[in-house]
Length: 139
Image (cartoon, rainbow, N blue to C red; front, side):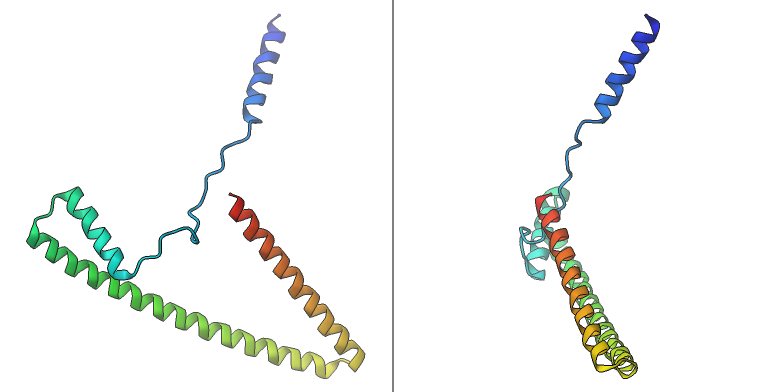
């Protein structure tokens, strides 16, 4: 009897863990509202005004601080994008140089097969990316 009770408790416990967990959705960037920096600042200022009860002078001071912060953020974003573009360019140049060196070693038939293999690999990578994107959209 005691064993049956323990067995029943274990089975109920295992069944409860086997239940499907609710999926926590990430914010979908496509569905997110696209606001300009000024609009974001204005929205943030309104939220702060209602939450903190800011008066007129405090609102003006806060608006100045928010616009300064936003300008700094946008400048850093532009800088990061410039750095990423430089890295992409450098990586592409390295890949072209590597490909040139490989083709110098290979025969024309091998070179043709090399190009086919690269194209196939690129296609598989695109498919994986699309699958990941579809799975992310379902969540």
